[in-house]
Length: 216
Image (tube, rainbow, N blue to C red):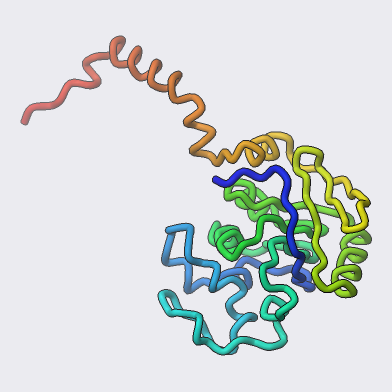
């Protein structure tokens, strides 16, 4: 998993509340569990004028001209600014997979659905909860300023605005440490690989009959 320490990126809007995981990546794309390749189908139903299907090249599909991610000014954005209860709905891990595959490293919103919040940290995506008043102000500044970018310092837990002002945020200490080190659940387990091997070796010596092959 890609570590997150300090990131600076262009900000794009998702200016609606209660964006659920089916909006983030529709159900027909859940057949694949490869973790990659979902970026072209991020926000598929809002982003395109036709219905997307798995395995279909999106390069020739008609784009919705009113959807912000299709605007020229937001191309290359890596910070998503959203409204409350982002990521609600089903628990599909495909939602953060699609956001990360598109190029987002961070989502800022007043609140997040609990399961989506946990899945994001496990996949290198940083969800930052900020007060609604602050999010309102960031939306206003972003709309007024083409090329509006923010810097996120996870070590210091601050969002740095273009004028240098800093906004503090808090995330779970354990999840923050894992994201700083680029550790997902498997990476965390592998940190104890030597202890696991030592236990398995001792267990086999103590209970050798459990490891005998049965002859038929």
